Image (cartoon, rainbow, N blue to C red; front, top):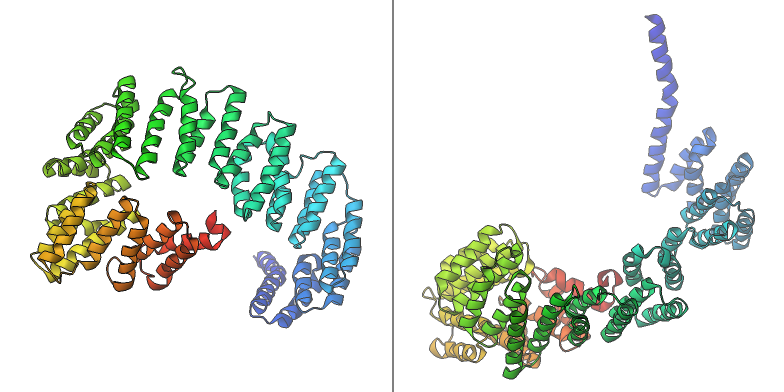
Length: 602
């Protein structure tokens, strides 16, 4: 028993120096964090004398912080003598020389390391990492480049060099490295595009990439990854026709089914490059009915023509031509799973542009009766059918459909949209208290647009009921709102103007201005919308619609009137004047993008 006790005591005593050193190192770190570097150095010097290897880094780091270069140099040279051939300490000595301003001495040491570099991939990687850890990316790059040379393999160290060039923000070198790397590794194309997008700062950078790609394509026209990257480059520059030309040329050269063109057309549509997208879809359709993309391309062709027409100032003959195209498509392909989306588009065109409500309702009733339609598409069609039922004077049918979608899609964006539309139905029909209860639930919606709409409508109802319990003026305003939704803008304007005549001094002044602004935006009359929104922002800056008006002004100036300076001004106004606005985050992001902050632009 005494022997056992003695052993335990011996083990405990032998462990005590380690505990003591750990405590002292922790104390030194605390001194360093508090800015008491000399106290930290006193402790580290003691520890270093006890164990050179373990405490060398902490000790020399403290010396350099206090600019005690001679002592740091002496300690490092001691380690070099003790560990001959270990490059880590040579790199550290060079770093000490650089901090002293003796770059010549440092370069001499580093040059000798490079000269004596052995053809060992692991050793090369280790040495380069030591330079990187000493914040010397330039020599890390030189080590890797020398490694490629002595190993006679230009494909080595690509990932390491890509990361170093990104760290240095060396756009030219990073571009070249990726262009060398991608032909053998095309799966990294998306990564390359994302990384270059975060680094490039303007047209000159993309032009540099374009010239490099064109040279390589000229030398190796069969290298698809270069053509794909050139197409991406044109998209970044918003040269949409050129992007499509590249995709078409590649498809013709490969004599393929046009899958690359079809994918590009979706991107073109999302960028509202409708003419280019139409040209791309027409190319796929021209390949004939046996092409696997024929049906999809023909449907998307008409949908894109629809978007082009309805996004601009259109005439009645334009709309009727679109309707005929949709009907011809449905005659050709039938009414089935593949054409439900086209049926939905046609119904919306008929209901909200041509005001053919019965035909639209019949079309959507047929669409929702088709079996095995994708659940989300079916739900979307049901919501549109409910909207049209409401416009057709069938509010009970509408509320039933809204409720079906809501219950079938709990805690989803489409379910919340259904609940919002049901609440709006109650609002349109004058059941304000029921509408407000549903809207209050939606204030916490996951989709910002739904949450914002719910909050605004709930406050509109509450504010007006507080002033007038009969809500007489609000009922007329709600009817005008429904007319706007139906696309009956002239009737809506007449209804809005009647409110002040019937109920002078009503609290709906800003609301009426916002409704008229929405009509102006629907009619693509952006200058008129700007006048109305500025009236809200200036004369009703504390009203419910104030932050919406300011944000909408920013959006119109940015996306419709191409005045980025004014757009930035209004986004900044959201940030400074309306910090509680639901538009705050998106306004901040768009402000930063317009200011040129690359991280947000990415």
